[in-house]
Length: 112
Image 1 (cartoon, rainbow, N blue to C red):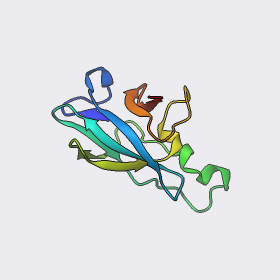
Image 2: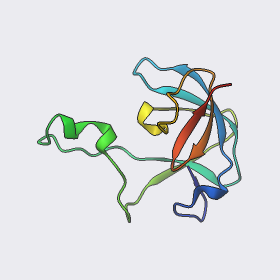
Image 3: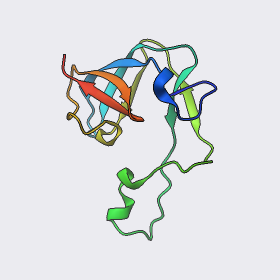
């Protein structure tokens, strides 16, 4: 999550959401319950070369490098997006009905 006009400082992000279901692909569907003006979801397609080893082809090894051009989608209350388990902090495994907030450049799930 980013706030318009900021690069990576997330102290000003007010995003809140809740996990509404576990998707068939193993990801988690998150519904936006609160969002600050100009906040958006950073989304980029992982570009992984086929000649990499199987382990290196895992999406958890993909990252956006400094200076990369990224696509940011503006979010609204009620929007739903799906993210993998790697998008969450390691504090707690995400589960359906957990609330979600931004923490340390990831999503943090908290039991209700």
